[in-house]
Each structure stands twice: as structure tokens, then as C-alpha cells.
Length: 426
Image (cartoon, rainbow, N blue to C red; front, side, top):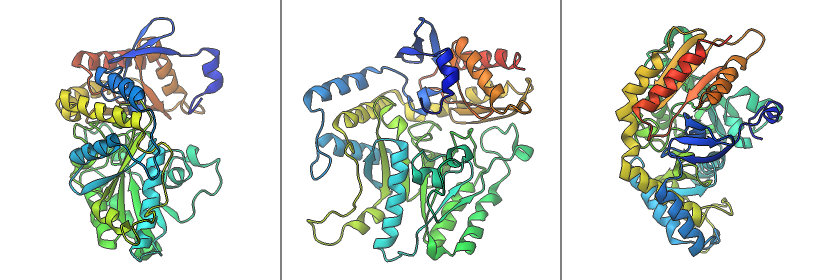
């Protein structure tokens, strides 16, 4: 099982057998409130009628269409709907099947783009410490989570990393964007000086680092990265697999922070987690650079058997329609203050050393048990499950990202349950 303590799990399996709206049903018939939107992906909750209906209808009408040299209308319709909600200038889409594949696609586009515009010496990729960009070789190379990297050899060559923005000493218990850390963006200038801009193809960052524990950038940080990359002809890629589709109270984090990258990597919330699908939004400038040469020739040698899969496309269209009908792409902004106040009410409880929040995502960082890292947070995870709330832990950090349909009373349930648990932890 992926990212699971397999031996512990199989001794006492935690099995879900059904899901509806904000709740899972366990094998023993208990209701568990979803505090994590599945795995950051079920933004509209579970078993939403329009999505269920669209999948069934599409499966009966056309289950699969060849992805190479052939097309089908729903993939183009979905691409147009994505362009409609994306920041201005990101007006072409490459479909994938996951966040990991979206990252690999964006990295390959970046390298190929530099080559087709005559900048073939630009082969270096810059990620960030504690960044998570999926689990394929490109993603773990530009990613910066040690446990995801250390077992797999030398990875891609020509990769460097910016420092992360997490500073407990200066920013603990910040509400929203932390005050300190803007200067860390200037580390990109140091890296450019070290390697020379003529060797760097792209920088990839999560606007808010999710899987590593909800690390929020200080004001102006992403704008500064955008300024430096533009200055040096380096592409900027936002990994919005977690932050996309309403998580911060805006369609994308690019909207929240007022920064438009050259490419935007998405997945998860694109189909509400129902069917694997990802999408990479790219600028017209990047797209058009490949549209040269004989028209019978393939312009970009990349893609997947299931790129733009008909059933996934139908799910994506129904998901976007559900978001629109219910105002979910901006609902996080309406609930952000309630969410913030709820989480920060946990300050002062045993072992809590930081609380972070932005939009409808949050983190509670716990002091690790000496000699037993991750054990304290994992104990909280197990206790929360038994008390009817699903949370997620990464290291000794509790990460929370409820579906965007969450009610104020359900936010209170999450907070109250965690409060009771934190008081009992060793």
C-alpha cells in the first residue's frame, strides 16, 4: 500500500466501504468526517450527483478513444473550460493522469521549449527543499523531501534547490502569510550566479507546499521569484496539484498571490478525485514555439495512452460544473476566517509548536517525541479516526484540507476532536 505503515495497517486495517458528501463509512458502519478531502482531491465532497451521472453516461456512450492522432469532443471542451478559469495567458492544456505525470510533462516541456527557441544549453532544473512534486524520477529530483529521494540513486543530474520558507523561530503561529522570509526568494539569484542563467531551463515550486506540512510563503515571495525568472529567461512552473481548484478560496493559487507562471501543473481536484486525471496549462508563447515545421510531423514527442480519456474528461467537465453551480472555487474565502480562528484556538495545547493556515488548508505542527519521530502525530491520526474524523499526518505535522462543502459546524467538529486528542497525547 502506498505511503503506508503496511505492517501496522494489516494488524488492524482501516477500511472505508462508502462515501457521501462530507463523510466516509467504515467497514464496521461508523461515519468518519473527511478532514482531508480524500488526499487533497475531493474538493466537492463525495458521490456528487452530476459527476456520478456524467461518468456512467460517458462509459455507456464511449469508454475509450485513441489518444494519438485521434480526438474526441469532451477533451477539447474540458480544455476550453480549464482555460476559462485559469489565469490570463495560460491558454493551452496537456492532459495527463496524475500530479506526478503532470510534473514530468511540465519539466519535459520546459526542456524542449528551451531547445526549440535556440536555448539548448538551458538544461538545469531548480526545485525547492521540502517540495513535493510527485514520485516519478523528475518529480523526486526537483522535489526536496529526503525520505522520497534517498533510496533511489542519483536521480536526474543538473538539479538544484532553493531553500524552503518555513521558519519556526520567526513565524510560528502566523495567521495566513507569515511575515518573515521574503529574502529567501533572492536565493534564486545566488543559484543563477552559481550556474549561470544560460544553463537554467525552469524553476518549479508549489505556491503553498502541501504534502510536506503546509508551508506558506511570505508576502511578495512568489512575485519576487517571477521577477527573477523573467529577468533571466527562466520558465516558472507552479505545482498546483494541491492548491488548484479552490483550495485557497480562489480558482488557483496563482490568482490568490497575483502571480502568473509560464506553466501550471494540476490534477487531484480536476476530477474531484473520482478518476485519475491531470492537466498542465501552458502559455501561448510556449505552445506556439512548437508549432513549426511540416504539418504532418509530431510537434512534441510526449503523451500517455490515457491522455484526455473520455470518461475522465466527462468527470472533469461535471466537476467544473459542480464547482460553478455551488460557488466552490471561491467558497474557501468565505470560510477562511472561521477556519483560521478554529485552528488557532488549539494554540497552547500540549506539544503544539506551530499552527499554519491559508484558505481552507491548515497544519498543526507537534513537537516530536525524542527518538521516535512521527509517532506523536501518527497517534493523533489513529485517535482521530477512532473518534470519527479523518486527518492526515506528514512527519509530526497534522495536515488538514476538508472538502470545500464543509460547514461551520463540521469545522467545529474537526477542531473540537483535535482539541480533545491533543490533550491526551504522550
